[in-house]
Amino acid sequence: MAAKLKVGITPGVLDSKGAPIFDPAAFAVLDQAPLEWEHIALDEAEISPDTAAQFDALCVMLGKVTAATLARPDRRLKLIARFGVGYDTIDVPACTRAGVLLTIAPDGVRRPVASSVMALMLALAHKILIKDRITRAGRWGEKLEHIGTGLAGRTLGAIGIGNIGAELFRLVAPFGMRQIAFDPFAAPDLARGLGVTLVDFDTLLRESDFVSVMCPLNDDTRGLIGARELGLMKRSAYLINTARGPIVQEKALVDALVAGRIAGAGLDVFEVEPTPKDNPLLALDNVIVAPHGICFTDECLLGLARSAFGSAAALAHGRVPPYVVNREALAHPAFAHLKP
Image (tube, rainbow, N blue to C red; front, side, top):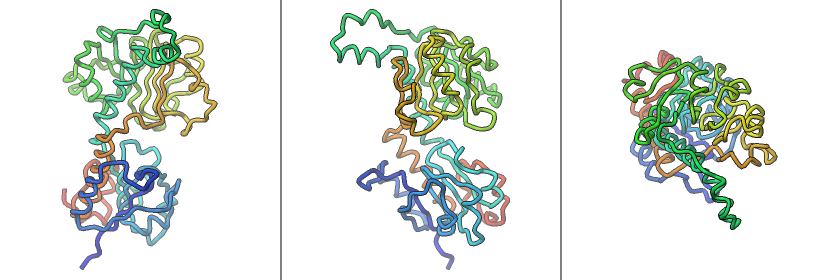
């Protein structure tokens, strides 16, 4: 009888007391499949070749996967299931060459991240952070100095109209905003169905009252927004980034915020994470920050776990997992037996 698939869950999904950060009900997905699973005790910044040799599938919250990870000739690893949708920490070409599938979890983040963008947009528009501070300080007389921005009739521009971007536009529809997006890969029919006008990059920056960064980090998007791009934005506009920090050039953003070239920013991500305590962004009153976890709700974490575990379970059942990033890897002989 063939050995059961062995699944490892990398650190990052347990809290300080050793309890899962998601509803334990998610483990039922693994328990009902023909596989064995365990938590990996060793916390590796880069998943080691030794770990890749021990497991057939890894459910990964943190930890980089490089060509070196996959180098051992006795490697068992066939699947990396990400707790999330970003995979800039994974060497995808190396995975494809080695016959390792990479899956992501869009169902887990679609609504939570979109609602997080909404939360930041509303908090910035209503100047909640500043109003909280003056109230705590007993400075009620200053409230007329901090008049917010109504959303009706304003323009929301999204850089990217994929899984999360589309959900954001669905959520914002009742607010009566004009909706535009820049995405060279977007399907025009999808945009039309959402009531979104596709525009070029510079037009989006010039016309938006709120610019939401919702694209993946890659060679084309690294440093995408710098001094020139911020200079195109309205002085009254806000930048929101819940995607990846290096998409926005931080020094240029600090300069624009300090000079009043844009009104403010909502940031869940930074160029370096954790961001240093002396990061100038942390000292600005017109910036709301979060530690790359603003979307972490019970809904989000349960969805991520079920999706990642579902990929491992599908492989154990001899099926192609959902949301495979590198589908060309399915041509590897190791997956010849898989059913769609």
